[in-house]
Amino acid sequence: MPRLGRSLLTWQAALWACGSLLLILGALAIVFFTGAPSTAAATLPEVTATDVTYGPDGAGVVVMEYADFQCEACARFSPMLAALRAKYGDQVQFVFRFFPLENHPYGMLSAQVAYAAHLQGKFWEMHDLLYKRQKEWASAADASPYFEAYAKSLGLDMSRFREDVNAQTTKDFITAQEAAGTEAGVNHTPWFAVNGTTLVPNDIGDFEALIDAGL
Image (tube, rainbow, N blue to C red; front, side, top):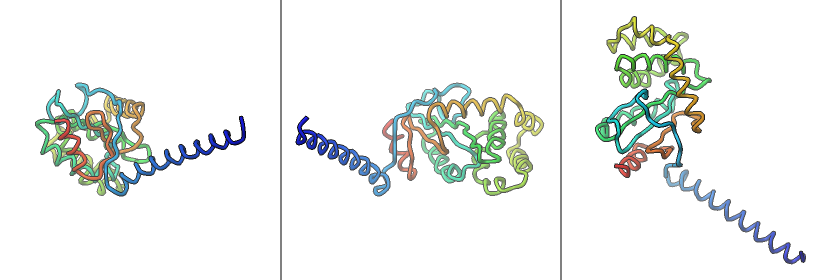
């Protein structure tokens, strides 16, 4: 190929690369400088009867969260999700899935505590309590006394609670949800999806925009 032709192709390739880079930088600028939420399509496991949910089955909008109870970011989002449940709970189904992180010493145990509460119909009460009191138990040398106190305050059957916390079926359920989430691409907490669109929200308005669009 003549030298001029090669130079032209090289120049065109460089322009294309620069254009692609500008598009990427532009998208990042939208997120970081305008506050727009980052969204992407995702294929997550279907909601089943074994899932921990709030709101009507078959709802037109499903808000899904993968979370770890020792995750500080998850705790910051907890009041926001509670407000959304209060606002949309009769129209939207909220799904919580366990995703305890290995670097959190009480990530798995707190998940077991929440699931044991779920088996007595008190998941969301324990969910909110664990996040509200996170700084209390997460820094403790032994978190178990705190978890027992929370269970008692919720009026749980303590004998059954202790049995369910330590049951292999409880551990298996949590690890199965974590493994399925990992396979679907979940790699951090909190991980949110609204009707199959993953969302990195800045505030409650980002959730509301996707929810309202789906209703």
